[in-house]
Image (cartoon, rainbow, N blue to C red; front, top):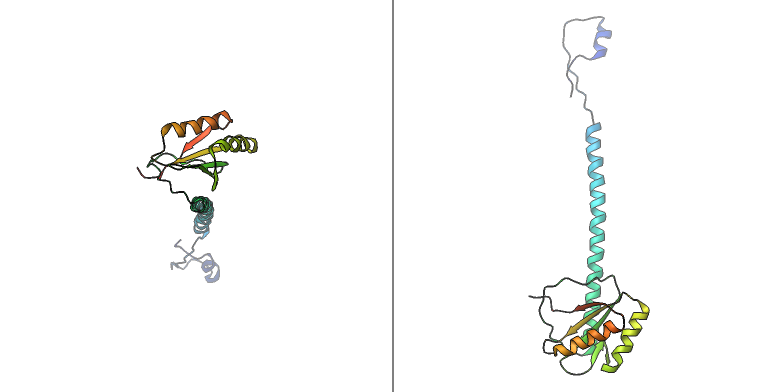
Length: 168
C-alpha cells in the first residue's frame, strides 16, 4: 500500500496547493505468486497421495486374493509369529502352504510331495526371479521345511521367504 499525492491532482489544479491527498494501491503480484506456488505444491502432493493409495489398494487386493486361495484350499495353517520385512509384491511369487500333516498346497491346489519339483522347475522357466514363500505350520518339522527350501534352490529359485502371521 502506498500513501502520497495523486499525480493527476497537480495537473488538474494547476500547481501545488499544499494539500496532501491520499491514494492506496495494492500490488497483487506477490499474492498471485504465493497462490501459484501453493497450487503447484497441492497438485504434486495430491499426485503422491494417489500413487500411495493405488499401491495400498493393490497390496490389500493381493492379500485378499491370497486369503481367498487359502480359504479355498481348506487347509488350516497356524503360522509362527514374526515381524520380518515384507516381500516384494511386484515380483512373481510362488506360495507354498505346508500343513502339519498331508500334502502341500501350491496356489490353492493340493500337490503331493513328489510333484513339487516340477512346480519349482516350471516357475523357474516362467521367471528366474520368482520368489518362493513358504507358509509352514508351527508344528511342521524343521527338516521338512528345509528339504523344500533346498529343492527350490536346486531348481534355481534362490529368492526364498518364510511366511509368518505378522505378530511378534
